Image (cartoon, rainbow, N blue to C red; front, side, top):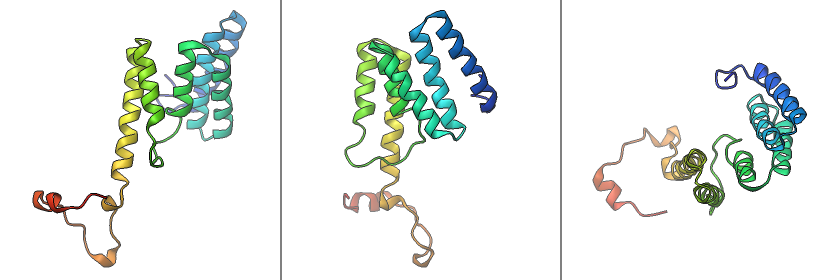
Length: 153
């Protein structure tokens, strides 16, 4: 909860304690889950190398469906949305299919949401949506007629 309310440093401290306790209890799956959460928190705190290392370690420690969750966290849920290269979106699609196959509705919804954000970033980062330089004048909203006449990219 601390991470959700912006107290990242306190969250990192608690997550390190939780990881030690999970390790001491002998629960490899719980340790991997806590380690992945710690990795995301470290990335949010600006420690991207440490965060990626923690996420990689979580993937190495996990198996089966838990591994799919860790791969999702490492690949999709750990970075701010940015325009992917052409043909991207495959990892989000694969993850949503894996979560559906495992009947994990919460993580399937997360994967689908990440996929939607990825598509929106691609769609609205297209050149026609960028603001023109000031020398070209103000941006005029498109009318229904101009949308019909527009040529596809």
